[in-house]
Image (cartoon, rainbow, N blue to C red):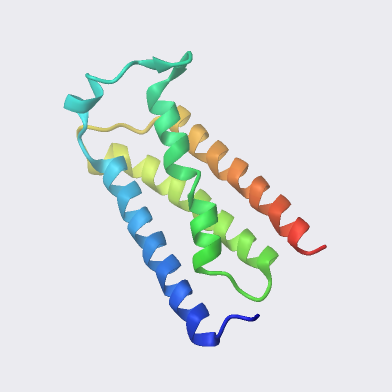
Length: 134
């Protein structure tokens, strides 16, 4: 049974809302001062620096939420634009940290982790998209 047009629009608005709330949370996390909290966190988890895990987990959902929020008739075209926007956001936020705040610095390793999360999520979405097309 096919979904009605109004039902799809309602779902789309929910995804759009979730996406923008998520982006707002990323911006807050990238520019906020969490030095008091970070002193209480372990430095590593399973030998991986905790801040690198946090960066990966912050950017990983971007592709899935944006793909759901802005899905067009051509899912591959949407995936390309979603990936480009994720890369642009990762670069912009990391570069601006050193300019906008005094409590944060630009870290090339953080950027590489952000981009690895985007790449991993894009590959997963590409595999899911290709399987849906069969």
